[in-house]
Image (cartoon, rainbow, N blue to C red; front, top):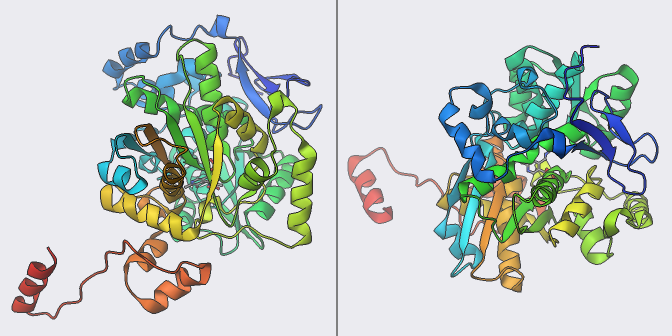
Length: 469
Ligand code: F0G
């Protein structure tokens, strides 16, 4: 095996402190062999020698012509030093934008505060997944993988398919639930030439199958249960801090599905604090869809906590048994987060503990109204991302987020990923609204911007413009 990882500074370690079994960085693992827990990528920071202050990263801005400083992930290589620079696979991911939005701030009720939107949909495959995929792909290549697989609600598969096609290094094999993927995402997987297996079932079924098949056939698994994925996703937080000139905001609000982002963000802050690179951490708000609310149910209603690595796992087992007994499946218009068995649950609990977090649920109506606000006052986003804005609004109304605080909502996917939902919301076509949204319990499109029908006649066109603009 051609191993080209940094065995001198990086290793893998079980996240449970009572176990803490370690594994070499060159091993392909998706869980602890001793206790079955999730794994972290861990570092010997004395040897890795990270920068003394975050502003040191600014020195790399003048070297943007080089592939690694150009990447918004690998610019921060010193904070994820598991690979030798010459083995990193990058396609220029992470060129994303933090935009301050006054109109969305007004909508959520931040009268004196600041609201920022972090557009991860601006990544090459149109979602935040590229941040993690570049890292997992780098590890996959360094251990000599020839095939990589994932289960997906669409964005992971688009990202994997893109890295496989652009680099030509691996064959991508993707598992999707039947009828459970937005067209923009499916079109990417097909266009990039991935082997696409449409499994009868939903994401939770596909996830279970891909784990079995990967282990049976020795295929490299790139879902976020892979600890290297999350190393790349830490960089979203580094870029937020960078855009705020290294000031820590009061809140990070993020949608929750498989809970990879919240887990990665928590790890980023744990490490930055431990390294003395920040002196405080933001609070974390994770927003589930109401129809896929496992984290909310367990954390807010049943009191499940990380408890410094000793969570009451029987609460999870009981809840999953109840879901099975009631044949309850995840269901939301935000198909990206239509997940009932989040693989990163334990890491997300750790993040919530470290960042004094809260979890909320947003209905499909609230998600779509939040999304429409991002479209009207920003660059737009896909439905799941609208959950961040819906959640921020809810937390402001509750008084949990104060009106003068500084809030960053993470927008995880591009507006063009799921055009059907956007058009159904705006078009004013009753049949379409009912079929796409009404069947999901969405009642209104309060912020719709419908097309104005006009006769092919100069006077009528002039009149329509004068009337509407
Ligand atoms: N937002 C979007 C746009 C997503 O595609 C996903 C996950 C999430 C949020 C939730 O991710 O909770 O793991 O941080 N999509 C996965 C996929 C499941 O297959 O593309 P989280």
